[in-house]
Length: 120
Image (cartoon, rainbow, N blue to C red; front, side, top):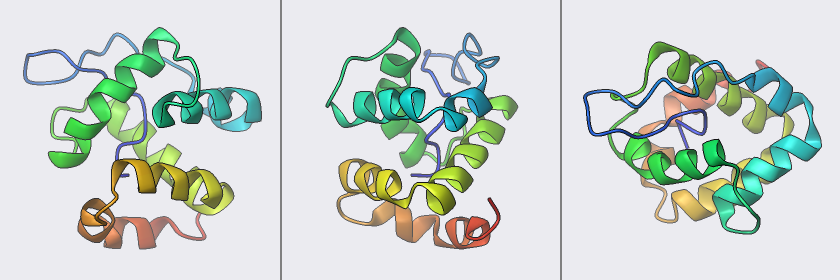
C-alpha cells in the first residue's frame, strides 16, 4: 500500500501531474471525503474522476515502487500512508486486503511502513 495517494496514469515516463495540486490534507481531515476515496478504491462506491484514475494506477504504482510518481505524488503517498497507518488502521487493513492479498507489498515496504508508525 505504499502509494495510496494521488497517482494517475499516462503512457509516458511519469504519471500525469494533472491532479498533483489536489489537497491531500483536506481529504485526510474529512471522514466523508476519505471514506469516499476508500470506498472507490475498494469498489464499494462511486468514484470521482481523480479517484477512478487513482484506482486504475494504484496497482502499477505498488508493483513498480512508484517509479512513475511525480515528487508531489510521492510526498502525498507518504502522507496518506502515515495517516492511514496511524489514524485509520481499519481503512489501511481493508485497502491492504484488496490491493495486497498475498502480503507482497507489505513485506516489500515493511521498513517504510514501520518507520511511519507513531509519526502521525
